[in-house]
Image (tube, rainbow, N blue to C red; front, side):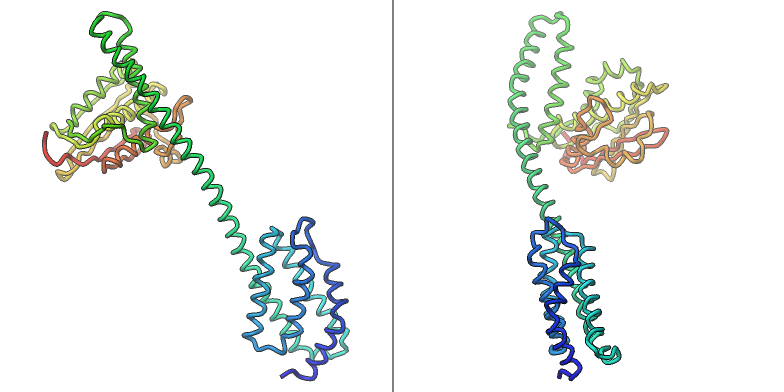
Length: 377
């Protein structure tokens, strides 16, 4: 029930409502570009009306009214992208002006204490609900913008990937023809100079094309998994890289287990070995390491997997880079694509294996874990 003092106060505020709102409106901070500029006055009037009704409502109904107004106002403030500090200042300015008018009511402050407490309750709850919802609304707007940007970026990447994959497939067809004609030339003219060099360069180009195809997740037409010799594959890779090994005066130490077989795509696993060993050779040559050495070791784990380690005595990979070397487009080479180790990891994981790297000042080790074939060749 509304007391006599409360009735007098309501009458006083209602009588001075227009001047009170005008004083508040003339003092608040409003941004020039605020799209809800015209709505701010109405929001102030609504808050003033809540204060006028605060003695007529029970606490639950009052809270619901305050919360509804706070949410509607904070939604507008979030969309207007205003400084939340300006908003809090404007609300508290309204509270201050109300207090200044209380002094003109002619009522004793001791009598007004309950009304002051109720006014503080209304403004405190309004600010709490408004600022909380404002933060949530801003986060939602940022999230929606981020999702839109990510979606647009992903669409472009998808289109670029499709175009790249199509281009590479088209590029590979004439390359295959050229490789075929090189083989015919070798058969007809075995002593012709430079054929081996041309063939080797074409193999490297074919290798790079395969990396892009693997990156685009496309499988080659007609490509099937097969069972292949693990040790033989390593020997093929070392023979392929022999010119680079010889040129860099790199010592190769090899200690691998008895003949074993794997099941999968032999050409892809070959690419992994070539990439890792060639990277090691390149690092040793580039840094002019004395007595450059690459060690290749393997052993069988639990009769189910082969563990292969390829180590070199080159410089340590900095700790801040060790976490990013397998990410796409990361490279420390001026002409590198940044796809090599990323593709290697993709290939090994596609074969249900693992590829890891550890590095210390004395040695850097790439470790490959692959499942053995179910049955021998």
